[in-house]
Image 1: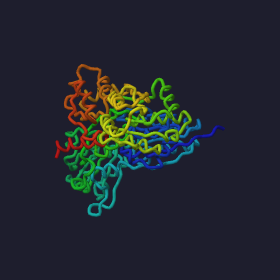
Image 2: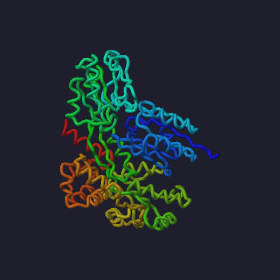
Image 3: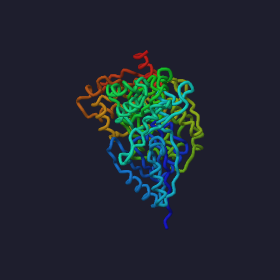
Image 4: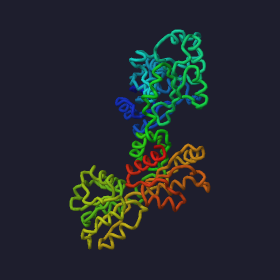
Length: 510
């Protein structure tokens, strides 16, 4: 008999990918198949190994990609092919997550499984809204209640008289559509109409929306706010603490929808920094970084590395692709021992240090002109400089170094290509006015962004959208394409861009 795989029923948490447990992350990384739900954060798929199969089985407002029976059978079939499956379920799999049903099915079919608990939205969403579900001055217990009972049940298990008399915090999950009935039943069974109520939509994410009221007023307030599922309902006196304890939605960039145009492999730093400030980062990579079509010139320069005196890196990508090629050739950093090195920017310097090498020159600012200035006191006459960089790059650096007497060999280490994968998504977001700001981290991100729009209505599409540029060179490219940046980073780094965005919005909302 073939070896049977194992199914891991994993709580993916309430939405904030940072709330995933360490054990859950390890299971995702090692899984052969990942089966995930609508409420599981798509960022968690970044942990999936390259050759794993990813299957979406989300259920949204009655629109099911696969029935529950179909999901159960899928898990069994994959396991019986000897595969290990990470079954990602929003929140906790055993808190209204139907994880128990899936476990029963696996057990009956002889498929081994493990349950990895997750942070349930019943606790996390109120916490992110500034509502503690228990508090010594208000209540010492909490009840989790489904807001959407199984329609096939012959009799209801809802005990409205007990809920109404209870001093517990009541947390209803999946109950937005039944909000009016929930409020009505509680009031009819004796709950005070003045009892505080909060609904938290997309809790723990940058899309979080909170509406508060009382049992008497909440239905009308939710209608006015046009709040829909997914959301939880919190009922009890602890809701009154929100005015005092709200923290998540008070972050300076909370709710700002900011497009990240960097290549996906490099976007994590910018996404992380902006997300911590409350922004909703929308990744629309306009470029992808790839090795050059012809790698032989770079290999030749590495083979002849002994003839060079200096090695100059202008970007993190230059460092990465240079060393990737070096190692692919069966060589290591010892062959660089005779060289002096220069870098543009602290991040490039840090990337170089990852290989155990310290840059001899780091310019004061992060432009090619500053590298030239840094070389002014160094004798370059007849010195040979190797400059591995992008296929399309500014010419000022090699030109000025040549004027100083150096012999510069430019070699293509990588190239930037147009990434078309999210063209349709970008245009739809712009047309629906669902973007607040767009960030550009290089000239190529700007020019490729315009290429994606492929429209004579660029000005109309970008109306009322804040454009943020990492520096003057990028800004110059933007202006040449009729885009005027409202924000330009004072320090030409990712942190500088973040600081400038923060300063801009704080000036608008002091």
